[in-house]
Length: 82
Image 1 (cartoon, rainbow, N blue to C red):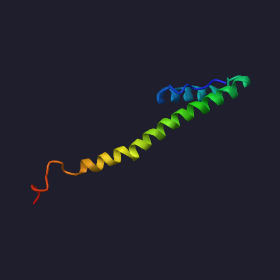
Image 2: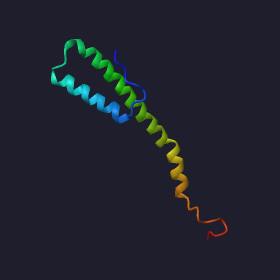
Image 3: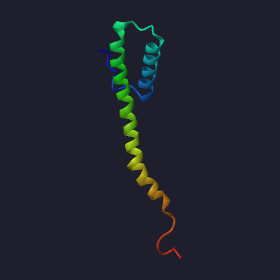
Image 4: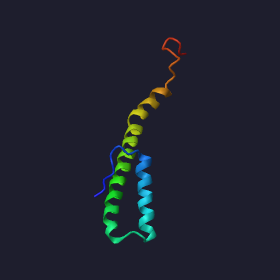
């Protein structure tokens, strides 16, 4: 069973998914090769999903806090206001 290495980048895993889809959609894939292709596609999909979820977590957490901090005007002290 061909596994997708966890060291693959998102782009590499996505490219692998695209190649597998093209091979399966062509109808030229040998029946004995279909199951291994599907297993490889599942692993590549999981790798892509993990990376997407990691980015979402960063955007939802760390960046949201950074945006809130940047919305405040750091150039004004309490003494300089009004």
